[in-house]
Length: 269
Length: 253
Image (cartoon, rainbow over all chains, first blue to last red):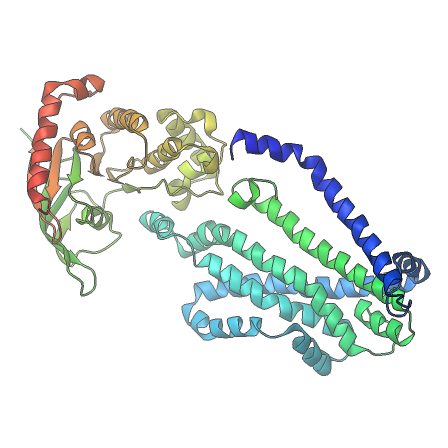
């Protein structure tokens, strides 16, 4: 980057906050405008301030539901990260295991979230266990696939360097392959984090049960039957915020691990 | 007068990959301890393969490679690749000490050796930097320091300075000779530059295109230490002309 470009980027710092803020205001104005223009009823499109009111009115329920969805998605995501990384390590170390399982890892990534959610709920019934399971299943395969790709992309020269000094297999794995694979792993983890919340909420929508302890997806179904349309919007917004939090967590951890050396983090993202 | 046995002796070495064409077709050479020899030849002529055979990174299809009388059979070796091949997640100090860590030496010991080597290649001020913060020339110095960390008896260099500008390259050539004069390792140097080969070497081997053989051996009797004056000298220029002429005879018409 030449100095001039760099200076321009720096001057842009204020605009980077101002412009999204203005976009937000514009979208809200558009929202009111469309509602007025087409004369849409509150049951079809509630106004932004009605959504805010719904936040206040339903705060207790929404908070409880948010915690429920969060713990489900978080536990599932955590399990996907730990078991996914462990599986990738096993698959890079034992080649027969890799040959046996790799096609299925790729295959399972293709399964549609909605179908996965539906099947899990049918098998494990409504509740936290299903939500955890869905978040896990959705995150596990992308993490295995990307971590494994990283572990196996170490340049030949680096491997030869280690070979030349008669490195032991564990040294090659933990001092060369694992650090090299970290950026790949975080790419997988970011996908898993995005999908964890989406998957959990989808599962809860499918569950649609009545024991009153459901998460956000469950509450969306309840609000629908109660015709509390603005509350559905509120719950949806919370889902977005949750997903955003998950991804931010992954990006933060990535920054901690890679900031010293990885090119993608040298220029501010 | 006692003459030590050659530290590296190749006899009738031939190499092919799988059922492919012969890459090396009968290489015989002897290198004495403390010698610095260069291998030059047209690109793709198997110079790198020859280095990798000596390093044990690949096996000869036919022929023998012996390493003098020293036991164990394979002396301590180091390899410098075309690119610096540094580990980007490790600091300069940790990169220099990687071979020592692989051999199980303690962190403290490694730090001490890394500091001494960094001084040798003028990197003492950047010990805690990461590779991406260094220029290409400095990265190559780290690579050189890393290669020296195990006090190798044989140093194999595969066009290590090929990607550098002429000024950095000349300076590193001089520093390399200065280090060699102190540590007395035996060096094998692959290069495309006849000038570089003449400047660094006791002997130059010229390789033909595939299937590759050694067609010429030129002994360079320029006095050490060699400096910029050496490059400017008439004798140096004569050797360059001689080596170029020898190289011309093997180049495809």
